[in-house]
Length: 414
Image (cartoon, rainbow, N blue to C red; front, top):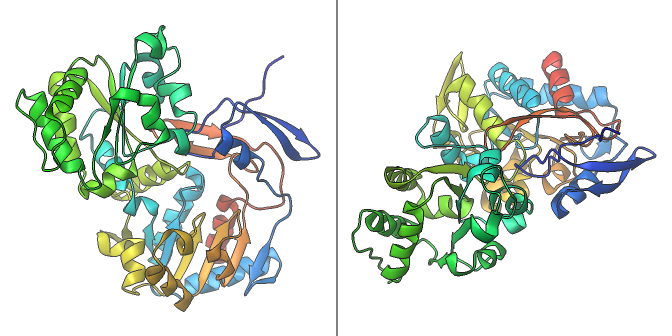
């Protein structure tokens, strides 16, 4: 009997081998998924919620109120979309054009710069399937996939047998962790864990570049040169190396160009590729869709048929400087993820929230529409963390509309 597999949209890995047991239109068992995926797949709700001023209304009223807010705004903000399908994201871009909105996602303060570097072909890339089948050296830098992406090591990076790595982690794979703390991933890497102080990544990169060139590596925090030389020798011997970059590295560096220099140095000696450790399932999709449309991955402002780009159009600066007069928040919770001193400025403008979950932001919204969970209650497509397009279908039915459906109706109401 042919098995019916589903895609888990619980993180940027988009695992496509998930099986579920459904009873009375409710998922009661999930197979193959990690602990994050199991909780995510079971989170569906059959009933819909449409609120205006925290009072129940019908769908038409909620859509009309949302459209009125956007229509009356001179500079609305559209933010989020990391948990929306490609189809919904493309509609959001069109909506931003139509309303002369500022458009941004969470990548503007996380991995956006890394993804932009990849889209501009600044370094080598590969797919997760390439990692499973070919990788002999994997570096986890500023990331802890054992907690954030629990199947990453078992499905791709370290433990599995690949077509060219039949003897697996026991003989043919080396896992290296560079981080400020001894994470669960660092413990798996054993002696190949390199602990650096917070903010020490730039110096460590410079020291590693020096070691790759045969020079004596030095750091102001006196990291043992012998260990850096040992690491350089392992990396020089890699036949297919991969660096998994997390937010820890990005926050430390401030500018990813420093890391690109290391990637170039590695590729003069060996064969290395970069994969961003993206958390939300379609952050990369948003970045790619916006990049195709504008040449930028985030922080844009549409105005009079033109597009502007810069840090002043990021969600952080837009709220900090109070340059927006309304906000449409899609699948995100600024009140939880942004500093209070910045997020509180949302209280001064009308806010529309589309989200499967009730959040701090939805509780303070003028309009809240409870939308379907993509991959559980609605279908579509997304871009995996490695740039591979993945199609997904719903596992259960729901009365909740998808982000795509709501955005279409708002566009029509405008």
